[in-house]
Amino acid sequence: MTILTILRYPDKRLHKIAKPVTNFDDRLKKLVADMAETMYEAPGVGLAASQVDEHIQLVVIDVSETQNELQVLINPEITWASEEKILYDEGCLSVPGIYDGVERSTEVNVRALNLDGKPFELNADGLLAVCVQHELDHLKGIVFVEYLSPLKRNRIKTRMLKEERELERSSGRGNNAASQAPRRNRL
Image (tube, rainbow, N blue to C red; front, side, top):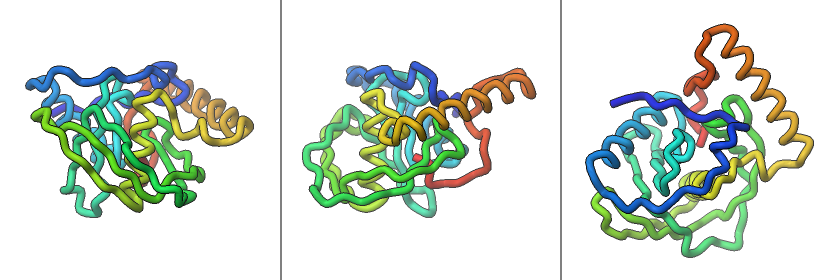
């Protein structure tokens, strides 16, 4: 397995709309395995294919404390969302070190395909519901900071660009999946 490079906000590729998955082959299985390893290593609780520059409708999620309940959602679609909302302090592997409140539905139902292309439904609440909504936003080209005020968004963009320049100067590498101290609730 391979640790993948996670795109960092404000990279324009994060705003690409993901296309449906049509091939359920070994390449897809390898991508899922690599994404899971990348998510766990970062560490985070969710990762969308868009964040690793693969613009297909695929997310991996594991909100368990033991990191042994990986969920793979292919071509996911929210079929129902509760009217009840929660303000959750979200983070993101593409926006390392930044956390802010985003309002999300407390429960969602999702229809998706598994790695074999078989349909299934997921009923999610709590952190899982928040994570599902956050990751599905990535597939639509939306990063969580876009829910924040223009002032906060601009400050975050400025900070991320500054950090990117510093990373490039100090390491010569640029994009880095684990550039901040670990905090596992990054989505």
